[in-house]
Image (tube, rainbow, N blue to C red; front, side):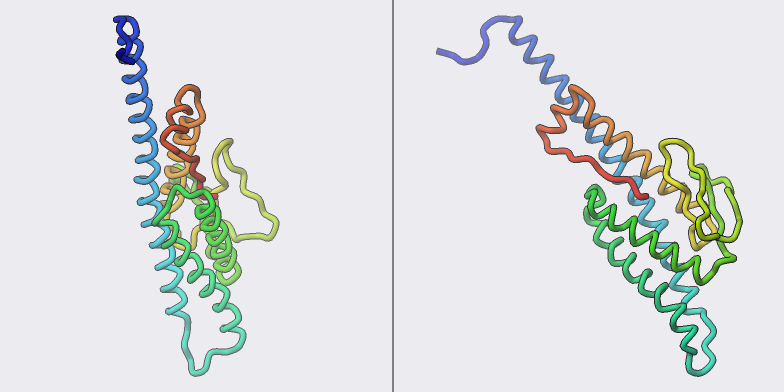
Length: 202
């Protein structure tokens, strides 16, 4: 006895469900690919920031033996640069891993803080669309006002809007992807193929 449905109505239902599943799966895959593509741009932008910081460290005045004061100011920045470079390499392999992205965000904030301590007068902030937000000195306790559903702009070491634009585009792609995989009935597809939420870069 055949286990296949014999009625035309059953075949139609199966065909509709199959087409829906394929369509929903393809949409989720496209959104996931958009996250990966935007991360590649972000990765390149973060790499340029690291190069800028490393170049500034290498360009520090070298007059004989460096003073203890100079060493104590550069050492935290050098350590933060090394840590961020290590985590950036790890995140590059798994950009959708929420834990890895959280660690990268923490390392980035450590680098930004170390840079601002050494260069308090060289702080320029760009909004997510690349417009200049505030070229003001960093002040302890100062809080930037971000638009709803957006991350607070970062005062990047290199005064370029590229990194903030890349971070904004990545976070937007992550949000679109995360919203899609929890919507019913697409969440059934996400569960079936084991798609997991990604994390933005804070």
